[in-house]
Image 1 (cartoon, rainbow, N blue to C red):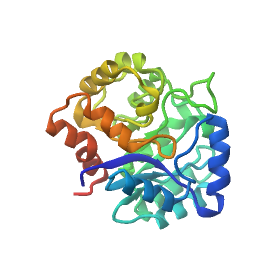
Image 2: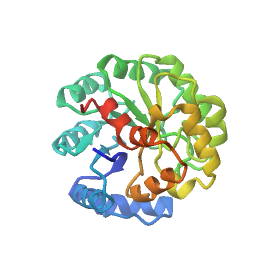
Image 3: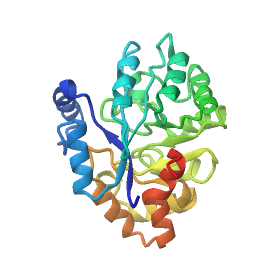
Image 4: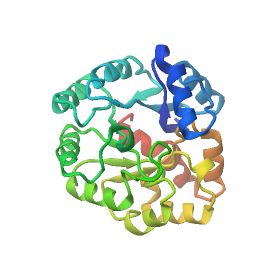
Length: 267
C-alpha cells in the first residue's frame, strides 16, 4: 500500500447523519462526508488512499458492545477497524478480550467524550490490559472543541500514562496534542519507545511547518502515522503538507504506509 490513513471516523448508517450534524455544530466545521462508511470509502478512493483505520468511540458505558460489533462488521482488506471501551463499563476488561477475539486492530479512547483524564490512575489497568493483549491504543490528545477550556489529555498527562504502561503501544492523535505542539516537542517527542504520533488535522490546524518538521524528526519518522481525522480534514492535503517538508523517499514511505503496516501487522 502507498497510503494508509490511520484516523478516519464513520458511523452506522442509521445514526451517521444526525451524529455528524451534532459534531459539526460543536466543532463549527463542515464535514467532508455524511458520516457513513460508504462515504468515507468514497473519499479515501478519491484522495488516492489505499486503506484506513476506522475509529469508533463508545461514549456510554453500555455502548461498547454494539460499537464493537459494528466495527467488526466493517473489516475488509482496506478497512482496519479499532474497537472502543468506556472506562466506566463494568465489563471493560472482558470487552477488551472480546475485541481481541473479534480481530479488531486496536482501541480508540477519547478522554473528552468519555469523561476521564489520561493520567487518572483508574485508567492505568486498562492501558496495561491493552498491552497484554497486543492492542495499540489510539488516544485523542490536546484540545477538543467539546471541551476547549479543559484538556483531558495534555502532554504532561500523556507522559504519566506512557510511564504507567511501558509495554503498551500508544498512538497520540493530532501530532501528540492538538494545539499544544510546543509542549509536545519538549515533553514527548523522541522520549518514549512505545509512542507514535498521528498527523490528524495538521493540514487545517497546524500552520508552522518548521515546528511540524522538528517534532517529526525528533520523534523519528518511524513513529509517525499519516492521518486526517476524516470527515474533519483531508488526507490528500495532509499528504501534500508532509511532502513539502522535504523528507527522503524512505521517510515518506514510512510515514505514509510503512509504519502503519507494521503496527497493524499487515505484512
